[in-house]
Length: 635
Image (cartoon, rainbow, N blue to C red; front, side, top):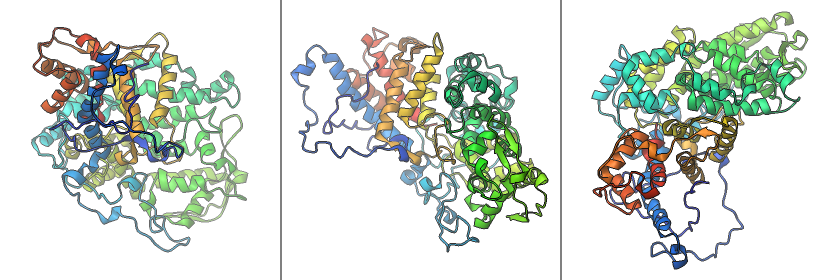
C-alpha cells in the first residue's frame, strides 16, 4: 500500500504555515457531497491526552526510520503551502469572488416564497431555481469576469481574452491550450497538449465535435475488461443471471475507462453532463438489464445531437420508466414522479412557470409508457389517461388512447424546445464549462443558439467556445473528486495492462471512498457541479491518497509509469528539478514560496546541487505533493 497521508496524526499536531505561500492563510476542504459527510463519533474519548505541536519526535519513532519521520513532518508543512490553501481556493471555485471582490447580486438567485395551492409554481413555493442553486444561492451571477462577447473563432476569442485582465485572480497558467484541455477533457496529458498545439485550437474542437471520426484504440481495449457495459438488453439477459447487477457495475467501471483513456474526450465530458441531467443511477433496482443500453442508446447516441431527440428517446426507454416509477403509473392510479421530473429536472426547470396542475397533467400525458419484464419499452394504450390536458402552453384534447404515445411525443418536443428549457440547459452548460455562477449574458447567448438550432447541442458548444467568457474563466472551476481522480491517471500516464478488469474494480471501489462513484448519485437530479456542494476533510485526504496510489504504482493490473519517468530532462539544482517535475505534472512551475516549501519537505534548499535523479528514493513521495496543490485541484 502507498504511504497514506497523516496516518498517525493526532489533533494537536497541526502543520505550520509557510510564510509567503499562496493562500496559505486559508484552510479548505475538498469535494465530497454534503449528504455523504460523516459526523464525529460521539463515543470518542474527549479526555484523551493530546500531543503538543512541534518539538522533536520521540526516540522510539526516530529509531530505524529517521528519514521517513522527517519526510512526514516536512510533508505536512509543504501541504499547508500546496494543499491547504490550494484546496481552500479549489473548494471556493467561483466563490473566490467572495474573497477577491463582491459579485453582482442578482435578486433572481434568491429564494422567493408564496402561498400554497395547485396554481402556485414550485419557485414561488420556495424551491431553489436549479440543482446547484442551493449551494450558490446569494452569490449572484458573475456578470463581469473581465471580458465578454463572441469572436469569429475559438482561437480569436482566446487571444482576445488573453489580452484582457481577469476580474478574479488565478494561480493557473492562462495558456489557452491548457485552459481548453482542462475544460473540454478530463485533464490534460502531454500528448493532448502537443496535439492541440500542432493542429490548433479551432481544428481540435472541430475534430472533437465529430467523435465517430476519431479512432479510440486505448479505450476500446480497456472496455474488453467490462464486456457487458456495451451489450444490448437481450445480450445481457442471456449473459448474466436474472437480477444480477454485473452489467450495471461494468457500466460504472466503463465510465472510468472511457474518461481516463478515450481519445474522444469532449464526447465523454458531454456524456457525463447528460448522464447527470437525465440521471438514472447505476446500479438501481430494476436496472440490471436496461441501464447499460440506456447509456448507449439514449445518452451516447444523442450527446452531441439534438436534446429533443435525447429527451424523446429517454421517455421511450425502459431504464427511465423503471427508475422514475412510470411503470406503476396508469389512468386509475397516476404516479407523478416522471411527469414532475420532466418539468423540474429534464426541461423547463423550477423557474419554468409550471404549477401543480401542470405536474398532474404532465403525468397524465405519460401514462401508458412502461417497461416489460423482458426489459423492452412498451406503450399500453389501455393504461393511458384520456381527456383534455394543458401544461404551460401545450394543449391537447387527448381523446384517443391509441394516439397517446404520439401526443406524449408532441408534448416532449414542446418541452425540449421551450424557451425556459433553452435557458435551463444553457445555464447548466455554462456552469459545467465556465464557472459556478456564470454571466447571464453568456447564458442568454447560448439559449438563443439552442432555440435557433432546434435544441442541437453542437452549435451551442461552438458559441460557447467562441465566447470570451469561456476563455477568461481560467481557474474558476474546481475538479470534483472523480474528475481529480481521472485527471491524475491521465497526467501520470497509467494505461490498461495485464489485468485491467481488476484495476477498474479497485479504482471503482476507491471512488466510493471519494464520495463520487461514477453514475452513483441516488436522487434524480444528478451530481452537483459547483464547488461549494463538495466539502469534506476526509474527502480531501482520500483525494491526496489517490495521488500517492497513482504515483507509487498501486493500481495492479495497469501499466503504471514510475515516478522517475516524470523527469523528462536533467536538472542541476533542486529548484530546476522542481520546475521540470511541476511542468510535467501540472504544466507550469510553482511560485518560489511553494518551491521553498517542497525543498523544506526534502530537508534541502532550492539552490542545492542534484546528484541523484531519484532524490535518494524521495521522488515518489515528492511528486504526489505537486498533485495535491491548487494547480491540480482547479480546472
